[in-house]
Image 1 (cartoon, rainbow, N blue to C red):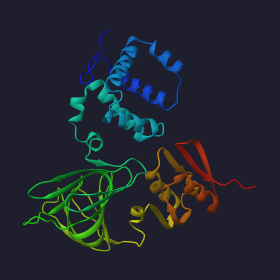
Image 2: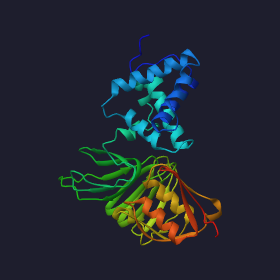
Image 3: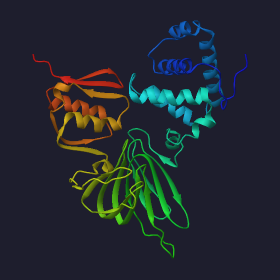
Image 4: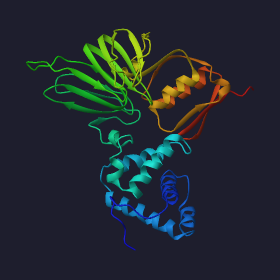
Length: 329
């Protein structure tokens, strides 16, 4: 039987295709054995055909940096049964069995982030200086494209979080600087600010100067946010501003700072910097966390929580951690 090329489709049901990718991810993460996979392959000829397709594409791309390799690594290191793993498996199934060309044309899927001009891995932080002297600090799991033309300087935030310190344009006719998110555009005026792309909204923190927000479907809506303010905005609206706290932006120094933060919220923030699943028992979700913690070692942060709060840290695997109430002696 001949194998289809990586860009072509293969005639198996979507259910079999997805199941084959689930086996691939489970095998690479050590969740299943080769023997269990072999048993599945012998159950139906389509199972074997689907697996042959996966092996064929993997062989052709072996040793080549690609979005496929990134997607497979992401799925492997993400907790089983999580929404992130399910999304990654859907991504992989589309590449293996639908065809890469058709799949990559769908902008709402994550290929744009994987092929971004600049990006960081989970837990990584990078500083980039653009050709005009503007400084970008990329937080964990962040992707941006940079588009400078004769008319404007544009940074497109595809995902994650950036701190921007703008520089004056050296051209005779200075070009505006624009940051674009999924929900709209930001135009700063000699400023330093942070933009965070979340699932269905963007967040802006202004530390110096001012930034104008223009939601993409806001019918002319725009608002200038001064220094010391935080707002969130959707594609058609802008929230009321709130005052920044002194420790907002601590991530740029490699720190996470909490002052009476709920444990559940603290863990949600910490999970942005480590692979896998990090949860807590609802019974301790409202415990309060305070202190400054270096993000270079998230396991050390968990150990510190165990020594300062009435909790126990349970490592089910390296990538699956649950925090539970401490057992009374």
